[in-house]
Structures are given as C-alpha cells and as structure tokens.
Image 1 (tube, helix red, strand yellow):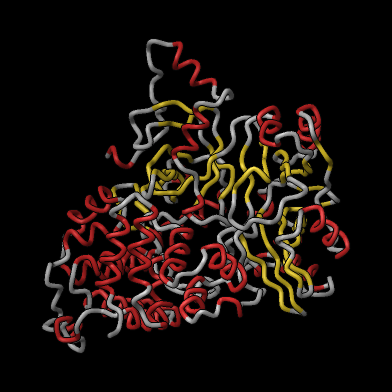
Image 2 (image 1 turned 90 degrees about the vertical axis):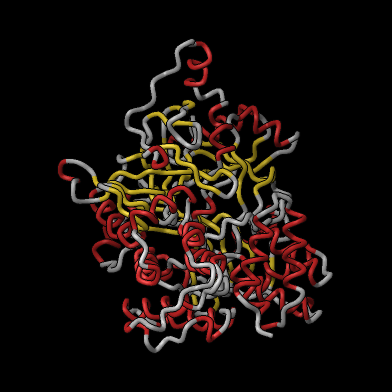
Length: 580
C-alpha cells in the first residue's frame, strides 16, 4: 500500500512530542523500516523538511503569499482571524491545523474547481502524489499554474494534521526537533547498521535518502565518493580570549590563520565542470564567474574549502563589495569589475580520486600547497597566549575579523564544531539571527521595508530579541523589500510578518535582560553587519549563545545591571512582534 501523508504526519507529531533524541529515533526507525524503497526515499526527504533530494538544485519557488492565498480561497476564512493564530503558533502549518475541517474540505461544488474530485472520493494524499506535484511546481514559473497545483494538494488533505505537514514541508519548516543526526540514527536503527557507517556513506554520496536505500539493500559498502554534492563544513568553536583558547588547546601547538570576512565556500572541480557551494548548501557559481574561471585553470579534480573575499591590489576589501554581487538577477561586467572577488583556500578534501578528509590537517595542507591553487591562507604555529595575541593583532591590522586556531593533527570533520578548530573574534562576537518581520521605514524609506525584527532559536521556536535598520545600503534595502514581499505571510499595518528564511549577522554594543522580548534579552544599538545569504535559518544562533555572551566579561552591561538597583529602561528602538 502506498505511504500516506496522514501516517507521516502522525510519525512526525510523535517525534515532535518528545524531547528525547532516542525516542525520536525509535519512532522514526519503526516507520522507515516499514516502507518500500520508493516511499522510503520520499519519507526521508519530507521528514527532513526537504521537497527534493539534497543534491537536487531545484526548488518550488513558492512564497508564503501564494500558499496563504490558496488556503484562504479554500477555507473562506477571514485573514484577520487567521493571522493571530500564525503569530501565536509561530508558523502557518500549526495555525492551519486549528482551522482545518476535521473531515477535510469538499470543493467539488465550486465552479473554480469543478474538475477536482472531492478528497473523500480520491482518498488520502500519498507521498508519491506529493512528489509528482512538487515536480510540477518546480517545473512551472506561471503563478496561476502554481496556485492550481497547490489547491489540488490542499483539497486532498482530509485531516488537519495533513494540511499542517503539507505546509511545513512546502516551507521547509518542520519544527519537530529532528535534526540530521537524529534522522541518520533512525536510518541506522531501522536497518541495523552502524551509525558511523550511515554518516560516512552520506558523506560519500550526498543524499540521506539514497543512503537509506543502500542500507535497506545491505549495500552500503558499494558507495564511492562523488563530487558535486555539498559537504557539510567543518566549524570552529568560539573562544572569548587567548587565555581561554590556550586551555582548550590542552598543551598542543596549533596553526593560526586569519579569519577572513567573506563567504565560506567549497569548490568542486572535474575537467571543465565547476560548482561552488555555500554554507546553505546552495550553488553560487553565477555570482562568481571570475572565481569559476580561475579554478578552471587548475588541473585535475578536487574539492577545496575556503573563503570568497572581495579583493583588490593584493588586499582583502570590505565585505560590502562582495555583497553587491549576491542575489542579483543580472550580474553585469561592470559590477564584477568594480567588485572583484577571489577564492582563498585553506583546506583540500579530495584530489584526483583520493579522499583526504581523514588525513591530518598538516598533510592536507601539503597537498593543497602542491596543487598550485594560487591564494592560500598563511599559517603560523602558536602554543602560548602571547603568540595567539600577536597573531590576532596582525590579522586585525590586515583588516580581517580575527584568527582561527587549528589542530595540525585533526581530520576534517564535516558539520562538527569541536575543539580541533577554535576562533577568536573582536570584543563581543556578532549573532546570526533570522528575520521574522519587516517594517516600512520613515522619511525617504517610507515606501520600502527597511526595519527588520530578528530572532534566535529557543529549541524549535524562534524568539525575537531585537530590531535593526542600520547597516544596509539603499540598494540592499530595495532587494530585501522585493524578497520580503514574496515571503510575507501577513501584513499588519506597516509590518509584514515573513517566512523565517533570511539570516542577518547582527553586531551590537552590549546585551541587556529585557521583559519586552520573548527571548528575555535585548541588544544595545544593534546594527546589521551583513546579509548572510550563505546561511540557512537553522544555522542561526540559539538563545543559549545569547545567554553565554550576556555572561561574558566583555558584556559590561551585565555588570551595570548587577550593581544597579534600578533596571535600565528598555531600548526604545527594539520591537517585538509578540507584544503587539
């Protein structure tokens, strides 16, 4: 029997209903182990909040406005009644479940859908039918056709939980607490395979849905590494001071290299085929044709890790130069000429048939130097706090963000943030936050969305911690206005509640405690350092990180709060949607 969306929804609800990773894993493994290969592949994608496989570059190109228009046309619900539910639930899917008829909707009598049988006539929506509809959505750029496809999907949802999870999957916002590691563990348990082997196989082939098929067939050993699927990046753990970093190094000498202010990227090359992936796992080749051309001149096939930075006369320029090349529909020769970019490599993961990730960094570095890639980060060896401070100061003098400390004996651990790599940045570090609302500005900005409410994660929910409007150019504001209109879920006066998709890097002077915000903290003088096109929403910071920075010695506001009997007044420039 084909797998049904109703059953997948029940499984996801069961996983969301427990905080135990082991219980989530057990619920998922029992379900996955019961599916045939075709449905297994789809279930893995949908549980992970994907409409397509991880190596598939397609997307639905469906914004919140189209989805909600379809919902309103089906339910005939008053938007003014629906949007408060969205705000309280933090997402459209759960709000929709609260108003969806218990027995589904019957649109057969309506003229506009007279050719669509009622859902009761066709039965519950299957995973295969969803996949076919997603293919159709990705294939068409006609808005009316997208509406028709979405309407057909939603009218097939009989149970409220089906409507909820169809919405969640379309938006890629599951909020079940099922991260990649839990899903990998569930696959391992479902087919009685070692978790390490599942993780290794996914590293080789890219798609967990394909890994699950191989596990079901007892054929994991046949997997071979393939280029042209993004590898999760190895990450560095923040360190507040050189003295703290020395303790983390535990008596070992580390390499120190400049922390560049650019776009983290990996480059895959084989013959004339070249792909550049960012931390969002998205391709960005079209934004950097000059980088692609430079890589084409290097012989052989390889996978490099490094940073794309704005570059002129042998120096890294301010990040604003590279920002002008991102997200553009038309990248002109003039823009490229006025905002030159280069790729600076600092690691190599694969070369000419040899996977290098398990080799120590010192050996990978030798291979990288032999490749003749051109620009590399410079390394120095450090083993004391004074040496770290010297390297840090030298990096800052070169207008870079700080330094990264790397254990020379460390393998490359995709997706891991451990003590093998450490990073030190200036003063209070920035926070990566998700935009939850965009507001029209004042004066010359009264017709553009220039003020952005931002949030961090608290478990599976986003909690607002502030609002910023400075740090972006007029050109970027125009670009963001167009984007947020597409992502808008609801307009309330001058404010658009938007799908949580865009990440902003927020700089600030201090952190204070605040009852005005759901997160319990407020940032003093927040400003946008840059738009993080290279990050997914789930990569944004968590409330625990905000609390950690609040307690840090660099946060003098905490000391003032503790020494004062009168709490400081809330920042008047901060705005929290949940308060309105």
